[in-house]
Length: 239
Image (cartoon, rainbow, N blue to C red):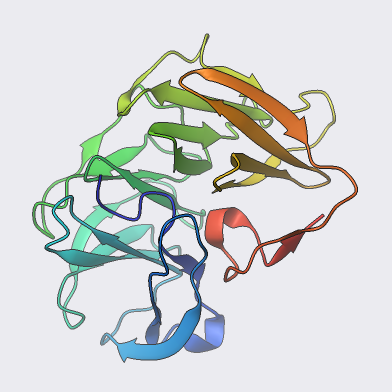
């Protein structure tokens, strides 16, 4: 409940726009992409690499989550004017991903221990999620938390206990996506049909509910996603 719940915005900010601040997005409903309205809001001295729009479970408070890759700093803003530092990743220059389940933001960067934030206030100290695999990609889908591509398993997708991204069984709850193809996972995207898994040379769909998942490769078709670059680590088209 609450938050972007796999289907709010996340976008990379073009270098020429970083001194201005961020894009403003509009919600279009569940399981749909977000269109850029190109409304720019200036935050003094902020140069975010990526921006997310999140809200608490009650929907009463909305935040912007801003990530600066140059120094690993994650900031929040609730009034579109001032920011508060939420956390500083140990590893800088990396790519951060975030998603929301049960009113909490969960964040990964592929190198450091995943973090969570309850959105109670903009300055609430984050909590480490030690059981979650240290993965590059994260996406909530059908009330599970999916993470993908660890340093040891670049083709693995792990999923949490139902409705609990803090509880994991990485031995039983793992799906290997064409493990021996020499490729690595480059993004995740949630749709009504299933969870799309992108690799450099192939696209896959994880289907099913309640722990009963299967995978299919999407062959000989173009998957067109009307999304800004950066959502789930993908661009506007994939083949």
